[in-house]
Image 1 (spheres, rainbow, N blue to C red):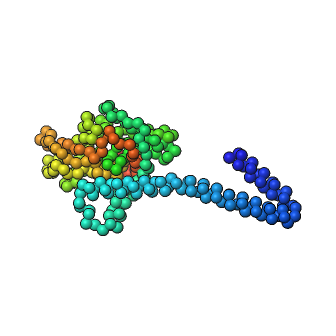
Image 2: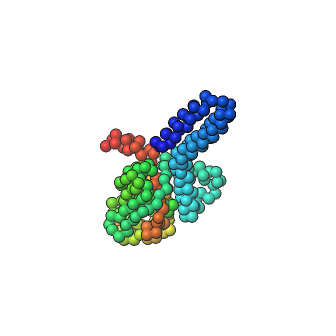
Image 3: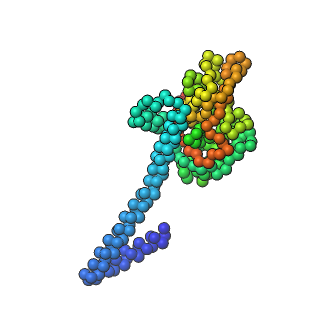
Length: 268
């Protein structure tokens, strides 16, 4: 930056000296000035383009996330397939319009602990914030717990301290989804009242009863269930995602999270 400033000062000084001479030199000055202005405007355009990349990247990430979620949902239910394409697009955009999304890559992941974690290659300089959701096109990955300049630490869903409010698609019954503690692609949905009928093959989605995770993220399917203490169902879920093979993720920040939490705190 210092070298560039010195160069510009010297250019103007030379032009000033030449401007006191004759017409040929004035012609020379005019050519130099036009060339300088062309380079200057090109530089400003490049700077403007550079600072707009983040906004464009965020928009593309959100659109890609919406489309992958749409494909996953349509692969597991036919409820929306009768709708016109324009209606479908509006439907899916409305589900995620409160969230900003940022694509990222996993730099490190643990799989063999009780409290597994993920290191992601995005940090403060990229706009990552605490308690943002980490997602993939196939489900929920975890929650951001610590943020560095260039990297972030997330508690994985394969962690005994993480749970997700989830709902069964066919009945709308809501329960809490936990990692089963053993597998890289299995979970348990707990606290489903007996009044609801459980169907094998039914899809489980995020309920939306959370300020961290977007609603209607497809998570997995039911493959078995048991009655616990004669009062609730415990449903075995096969996740759409296998944590042993993930690499690319999305960081999703709820732009209205603070407003929700402020209202909750009013009545605590």
